[in-house]
Image (cartoon, rainbow, N blue to C red; front, side, top):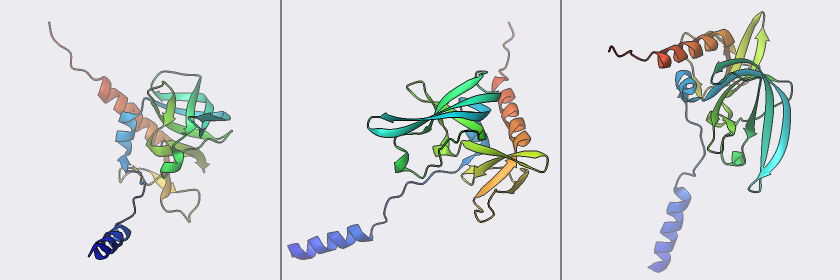
Length: 184
């Protein structure tokens, strides 16, 4: 009887679905609202470090335009966090790459990329238009001006016009700063 119980428990454990880390999908407007800093920048430096025995990659970028947050000339952020190996992260930094960055401020004051790296959107030019490249976990409105991603083999990566995102970010800022006035 005990052997039968042990065997049934083992079979039950083996049949249970394995846990996977999966990134939740987030509407672009929510990504905008929950970001502390949003900038268009070019990565100028990448440095490796160790934090609590985990490898970490820090990046410094020259800011071309601040879309949300404090106006900055440059920004340092955690490009690849120490716990990166536990999730389906796309966080990275490449020297010379121009990006749209959605960042949040960690408890220790360091900036980090939102949405497990999905807040890093490399820029590319198609024709005369600049596009931000993003993964499907960032949900765009149906009318967003998109083109296929840089590699047609990956349908889960698309590019959206940077100017379109800039307008959405600006409109979010206007909505959040519109505080009703109290009459005296």
